[in-house]
Structures are given as C-alpha cells and as structure tokens.
Length: 586
Image 1 (cartoon, rainbow, N blue to C red):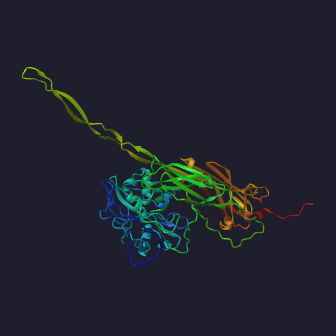
Image 2 (spheres, rainbow, N blue to C red; image 1 turned 90 degrees about the vertical axis):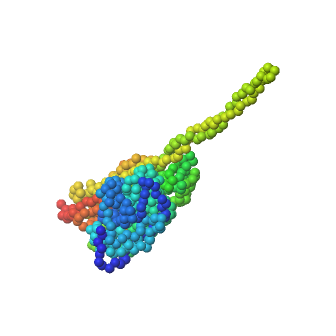
Image 3 (tube, rainbow, N blue to C red; image 1 turned 180 degrees about the vertical axis):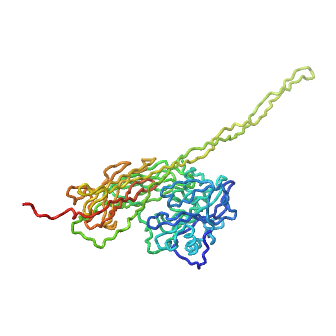
C-alpha cells in the first residue's frame, strides 16, 4: 500500500488532465469488464521526457475483483506510454502481476454506464500532497525533487477484463498495440472499453511531453493510431517556471530541399472494399492520389504521400480530400525552414571569454524507431442454402369407362391434377469482409565521431590544443521492411559548447546518400587549407570539448525519426604553446 501520511493533505501541482467516455452496453460470455480498475504511474524528467522511476500500477478493485488475485492473468509488465512510443514492444507475461492498493481510494477513472469519472476529483487526487508523497515512497523518489519543477507525473488509465475468456490487464496504449497484433479483434469484441472508455478516461488539455491536446470526440470509439499518439495519458507538472510545450500552428515542420512524408488519418465507419476509399493530396498545384485505402469498423488507416520540399523557406498548405467514403482533415499546414547559414564567426587569436562556464548538453525530440500498418481486406465466405419452394404439378388420366345395360362399352374418364413441393433454391455466399493488419517498422541507428584536425601538429587520436580545428563524421543507417514508405536520414546539425549550444551551429554536408548516410562539416571558409573543420576557441579551458549533433529528417508514415548524439575530444593546452621567439640566424 501507499503510505498513509499523517501530515495534513493539501493540493499541489498543475494537472493537465481531462476525461470522456460513455455507456458501455452489455458484455458477452467470455468478453466482460466488471468496472473501474486503476492507473499506471511514472515519474518523468521534464526536459529529456524520459522516465526516471519504475512504473507501477495503482488499482481500485471493482466489485467482483476480476482476476487481480489469479495466477493466470495476462499482462505486459510495467511499461509506460513514453517507452512504447520510443519503440519498446509488447512483452506478454502470464501471472506474477503486482499492483498497489492506495490507502486513499482512487476516484472513478474510467466511465461506465453509470457515468464518467469526475475530472475535478481526478485532478484533486493526483495533486494531493498525501498521494504524491505516497507515490514517492513507493518509487523511492524524493518528494522535494518531484515538486522541484524538473519532473512530471504521467498517469495512464488501465483496465482488467476478460477477452475470449482469458483475463487481461492493460493500459490504453497496450490495448492499441495488442489490437494491432490480433488484427482488430480486440476492438471488435471489447472496443467500447478498449477503444472508447479506456483511452478517453484521461487525455491532455494542452500539449505536453510531445503529446498533443485532444480535440476529437470524447464519446465515440477512437482508432489505434489516435490512442498511440494522443490518448490514455494525463500529466501533472509542478512548476510554472517550466515552459510548457507550445503547440505549433503547423502540422509539420520540414527542412528545405528534403524528401518528406505527409500522413493523414482516414476513418469513418468501415471502408467498402468494393468501392475503396481514395485520398487526394494537392501540393503546390500537383495532385497525388492514394488509392485502395481500407479499414474496419471503428478503426482508421494512415494515408501518406512522399514529396520533396522547395529550396527556399516557405509555408505550404496541402489540400486533402477523399472519395469513396471516409473522412480526414481537409488541410495540412507545413512550415519549411532552412537550418543553413548560421555558421559560427571566425575565431581569432585574441578572443577571450573569462566568464565561460560549461552548459548542459541539450536534447531535442528523439524517436529512433516507429511502426505503422496497412489494413488489407479479405472476403470471409459463408455459404448458406437459400430455399425456393415451388409447386411441381402432375396430371394423369383416370379411366372411368363402363358397359351400359345394353352391353355397349361407354368410354369415360377425367384428368387428375396433383402437385408436390420442390425446393429449387441454391447456395449463396452470405459472407463478410475481414481485415488483416500488416505492421511495418523503421529504426534509425547512428554514430558520431569527433577527431582533431590532421593539420594540428601535436594532436593525438583524441587530444588537441585549443585554437586548432576538429573534424566530425556522422554515419546513419535506416532499417525498414517498407522502404517505399521511409526516407534516409537527410540532415544533421551540430552545436558547440563555446556558444552554450545556442546562437550558432553548423549544418553538416551529406556526403553519402541512401539508406546509409554519412555527414561531415562543410568546408570552412576560414580554413587556410579549405578543410572540413571547426576551430575551437583559443580560450577554451582544458578538459572535454563536446559538440552536440541532432540527426533528423528520417521520415516515415508515423512521423520523423531523429537522434541526439555527442562525442568529445580532450583540450590540453593551446596553440600559443607551439610558438617561441628566437633571434634570427645571421
């Protein structure tokens, strides 16, 4: 149990949580949810957006205590939404499920037929000092650190239920990933819970930690992609000094002269495979058509187009339309920026910076793997005999001839008409469309190497004097099972410690293109030998010199893959030590 502290409870924190859902209707044999279940809690670093505590589950047992104490309950461990979105896969486990029953009872989280949870009660609960201290106690995390402003609390709703007579417990994110694995069957049987009330139990009012505010329906079923990108998450932050993530007015941020992928989500009812949905993208006067878009009832399908951005910065509005049914957003707004042209100034021998202090190496958004999928329809035959009963008539002559009193033969008779019923029916296929989900993945790996410039006369493998140059190489590789739907990593930008990793940077040259990319510094115009180099400042103190590189623009239908990278050389001494004054020889 969480500790029941004796200190008076009072509210603290700033909750970014809202809720929705609605009635569930009746269950069916082997597919049952008995009521409220609980939440998964994770403490996250506000800057790096990575978990700093192990996740754990708080539960509010339903009246029937479904399967909590059974040894055969199926679960996926204690994995947070952030870890799943970073590429962690589902790992099912049978039994050994652990949880915490808080002494301060959880409020209603997931909507039922009797109503939705109280958002005021949920916010109040997770901003209560007593609850927060208990969470810190269970995770062995200092309460003063939690509320310092450097960390945030991530809360995910989870439910326990029977699916096909097997006991499961899962978060909304796990339900979406599992539904993809079983080809939409979880949604078909348990969708009112797993694809409506569970993901809509918690979502964001404002964008945070890279997750957008939810502006869609709060009463209808949602798709797997919506769940994975936006739903089943609440966040509590603890300081107004931390700037919240400011949502962009643009749907996409691209770089100039880059191959990119633009995706939209298509949904609405079930697509008709006999009349498939098509999506039209109009970009800069040219129309791209994506044909044969399919998805089952209650789900959706990504449709995407690969195109090349202009050479100059601009804003492009892409028009989107559908035919054959289905709906999607009508416009996609793209901001095209140029990272080039902000190179550092030429360092000179008399530069000074007596007040220099090292800055923390920054981190940009990093996603090194992602997944998406394509629904494929197939016809499930179901042959039934359709009767067509018809009368089958028959006629026969009945001879009633006789001999009269005079001995004459008198011919007589009549036709006897009769019938019987004959089934002239036939077999008809009363089947239906089934949909298989074909999943695809992409992953990005890369290495960064910083070395002293070859022209530095006294440098070793990783040691140089300040004032000399350094060289850099970045090698990146993309692995995917759908190459037509991905791009290479196309840009890398490097920031330097002498500028506090701000103000100036170098956009690297891509020297090798393809699934494997390589990058180096561009030729330095201040280099006497036209070297691909960056000059360290003469005043830089002895110690590690650590440039930071953000590798980006590896595009997939599920978004951009990117990586943060660093490498170092050791500064020992400065180039003035290479000089001496001596009299000229006569």
